[in-house]
Image (tube, rainbow, N blue to C red; front, side, top):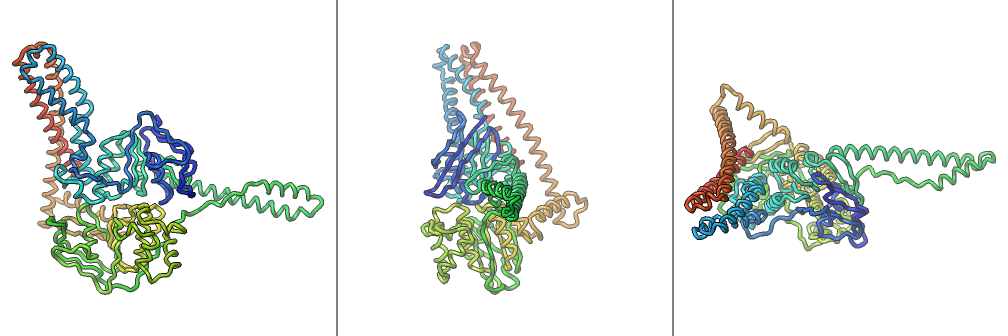
Length: 640
């Protein structure tokens, strides 16, 4: 079944075409990735699909009765409600029906209605039907769904009943908006960069969740690993056109390279043929015996359509990070650091050092304080206790994932020029041109820029600083794949030191020479890149579990802890099975009681009817408690 079909759609901004003759089709259940360089029109296409923009030409045809949900970039929830109340708005129909069922139960317990046999019987039959439908539609499980989404998206440490959305960060608001959208379960999920602001653990959860999602998915993402795990069809937008490829991202790249190789071969053969014809004409036109053949060839040459040379490389940013002066050997020393906001500590007793030319990745779950730590090094946040000491001749350059240093009211040109007024206009334009801001694009206001454009502008500002110690907070967010590759190459050639935070697994592997894992009260260092870090963690865990004779008190403690954790897990798994059986029994008993209440033997017996209603109320209350326990056990097991 076709969920969405786009036919010959065109969209321009003033005189500049953004999308030309776009054709796209989505079938029920398909997983489709939309890729292309930043500014190619991916978000514009999504906004046309959902009706926020109107195409200039063409048709957007929805399947009959199709529902869709759209998550734009940085579209966090704006609400005064608590997290729980906001997510429950998705299930307002269940809440209303639950309220109606409670009211019907109250009516059935009223002695007065028990005296009116026909009315009571009709009420019982209506209650039985509505109660059964409520169960079949998932009325007893929606709160468990909400808890599962909150847990999966990394909100396990928050009390959703008391935490107001206004207290969340921008990234957390976006994650919560994603959670609310997932709970609505539309026929088509339309996601624009959903992996932004997700840590690696949450990314893995989202990948698995979307793999099992019952509807179709259209996703814009520059996360190569995420696309490989999820999609089966790729649409690429490039130079206003769209091309369809079957397969995941890696298969798309292979197909594209093969197509490009074939186009280059065809172009070279065409050029060779043209050259041979020109030479034949030149040699034979003046000869009487061959002049007619030469003239014929010339006519053929004139009629041949020219073949454009295939573009072998996508235009991308040109970055070159340099330093003004070399730093001392020890670049940063952090000792017994304690950080927090208001009265809540985030990090305590954190100690580590950074040395010249290291590339250190800070890893840990969202909310652990990675960005806060970077801001404390820049001086934006003062530590409660401990020391942060920069080494000799250290000059810090900071990349903020929120791009807070950008003024939304300034133009691109003035944003850069105001920070570096000693440069002349030509120099400023040349720098902006290297970051793909050309011609009139430099007059655009910062507020009008896409996420990728803002990222490129921030990188241009950082490059001109010529700092010898770069603090990078999610530098690949919003960058297209071509820009990511250019950034990776520039940082590999950079002669200074880097301390960075990233959830991009490919970037982590390519850049890191050391990984520092943050917990609330410890910084643990691992030599190597991200894969090395994961392997060492796995090896340590296996060593602790398999060690028959622990060599130290610490090893023994870890061994005993792992034994206890495994025992606790088995206990929870057994309890989960018991709870599932109890839920099944409760539902059968409830169904039987509802049938009994509809029988004349019961509703004609006033006392028996009251007893049955009381039993029904107790069983339903017990069922709610069982569902709550089931959800908590499931969340704990998934987390473990």
